[in-house]
Amino acid sequence: MPPAAPVRSDYHVHLERGPWTLEWLGRFVETSRARGLTEIGFSEHPHRFRECRAMYPPRDAVGGWVDAQCTESLEDYVRLIEQARRAGLPVKLGVEADFLPGYEAALERVVRAYPWDFVIGSVHWLPPQRRGEPWWGFDDLSRIEAWERRDVLDAYRRYFRLIEEAAQTRLFDFIGHPDVIKVAGYRPDADLADLYDRAAAAFAAAGTCAEINTAGWRKPAREAYPARPLLEACWRAGVPTLVNSDAHSPEDVGRDFDRAARIARDVGYTEVATFSGRARAMVPLG
Ligand SMILES: [Zn+2]
Ligand SMILES: [Zn+2]
Image 1 (tube, rainbow, N blue to C red):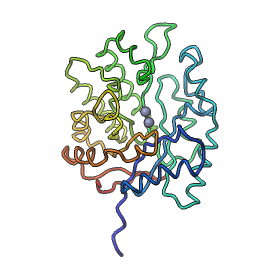
Image 2 (cartoon, rainbow, N blue to C red):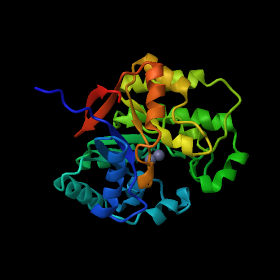
Image 3 (spheres, protein in one colour):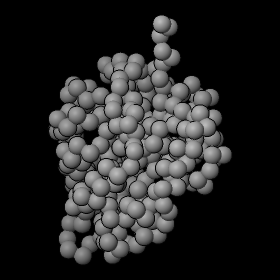
Image 4 (cartoon, protein in one colour):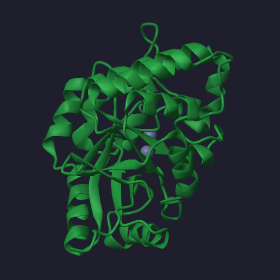
């Protein structure tokens, strides 16, 4: 038997800036093919879907933001991916599920209720520290000035504690953009090695992977997620990886994958994870 064609995938792609049509989805597939990828996994945010509203805090605690976003039906998304499959497109059904402490039960319901190929665990929100304070969506770059009022090292510590907790739920196939707390370009003047080692150990204990996400190069952080020392900690702990783009528009699918793969190889990785029906298979790093 001839060897199977190599699998090269991008499992972190958002359709959110366009309609639920095969035409829009097809533009993402076109870029993935042009960049030599063999499959593409879509990973919409649950905050878009009415069925997922209970995964987030009530209106007052998130400034109404989730209510404004939460206007669509998850059924339309699932139906579009099934339609694309029937049309012969190499697509996978995924979700980038937020981890918010206290909302695990609703998260678990959504994880169990749909035929996902993969579930990404991401932290985009830090909980209030005082009663009455809202949650902080720290990756909202339209409100980057919020960082000026924050203790940066404390924000990093709280974030890293949450990705450990996210891994411990064992609800996720991989952790999304593992150090996205740096997205706005604010970095603490401190050695983060302990935070990195603890996060990597938590991922390993939970049997979850950590993605390399190239979107960081397109953000004020000017660096892929995770930073190389965190990727090295993951490698030492035996945490598998995969390379993803976090594209929100067709032209970003598969972007900077060669650069990311070089870093992964340099650190020691020779394989990346692929997923089908939430089962993981390792394939050679392309
Ligand atoms: Zn994200
Ligand atoms: Zn994303």
